[in-house]
Length: 326
Image 1: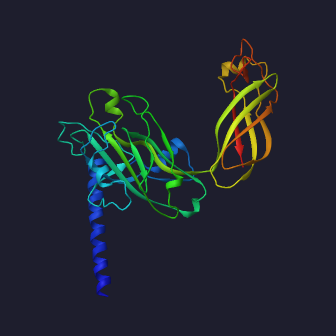
Image 2: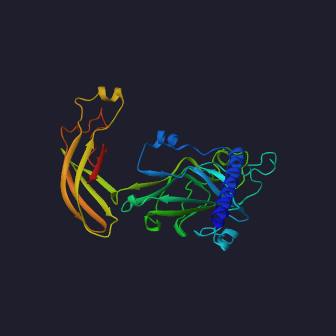
Image 3: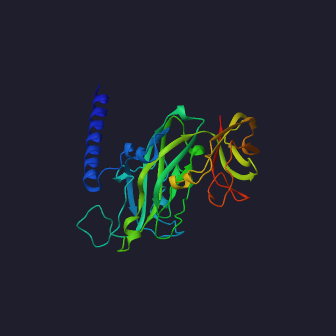
């Protein structure tokens, strides 16, 4: 009975301490973007949101390939690392570094390296799907680990401006039905008066951060070319990420060009959507290249006055097409 009482008191103290840390974080940094706001932009999907308060730690460090900072030496990315004394910061949320602005306690005062850690339970019901870690924005020079395993080093493609949506397949690192530890490392650079660095800053930010669960079989690339007068040829690569052969049904959907009302008035006739059953295919584990053709219903051919139609020129397809696997 005494042991139970001691445990209860300890749990109560820990809960109160967490509540105080959370209130302090809300006062300093605000609250993260709510999941329902992200749904407005991206729609509802089978996913787990990561919008919450993450553990944050700033350490001295340099940009580029220098990985000699304290976090790399002490193993901040390891699942069992003790981050209980780290501060809380909302994700997604910008982290600003603005030397000299000391009256705002949420601003960092020098450049360095930041670490964000978060633990999330991933239900066993999603096992068999691909788990895609999604950060709308993460900068700069980030490294991402899941359960201590490095899964990505995303590239910020535009120097001085982070305009990248990062989607990382973390399926091989996930422990299904258990708590999973996500760690992100990134360089923190100071803000200047320049627009890009001021508005596009450090950390995990933007409108969305989640883990999405998608089909283990998907189309990774598709090349489309016309076969006049009424067909298109499709050369596609389907990826089977499972370890066994799978039989799928493939259907193709082709839609006409969606132009303006002024454009539609110039058409001699309107194109229609074409749906075509490719049939059953056996996919081996890994990449599978499939080639097939689709006959277009009532095709609208290229014309001098309507260049953006089903077929543009003699060697370019300019509608939209998709191949669906079931």
